[in-house]
Image 1 (cartoon, rainbow, N blue to C red):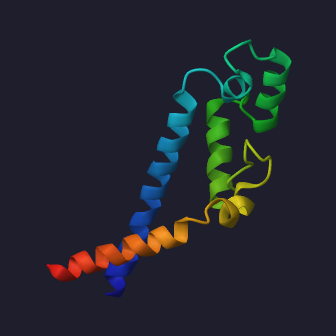
Image 2: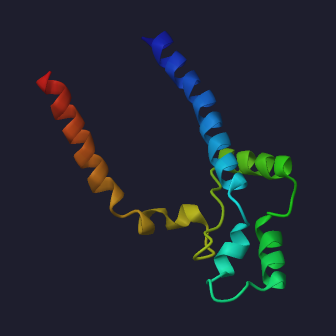
Length: 119
């Protein structure tokens, strides 16, 4: 049993790395920049100075590999970054922003357990 548990725990590592890589790649290949989309309202072009300042603030002007290395080290330290909307740490927003999650996760866990018992 210990060997099985250890093997499962060790399988988590490559899974987390692949998921982190996929998330990073998806957000990196989206056309345009986040800063431009944040300020563009469709009626007028975003201010280039404001876009440059936001790119500097969030490190979006750094090379891709440097951004990925920063992303992975921050994830390893449970630093999920700063919210674009509130400018507060994302980890601090967790309970306040995800207040619906515990009841739904409990409900889904119960449903899965009852479905597995029926078989």
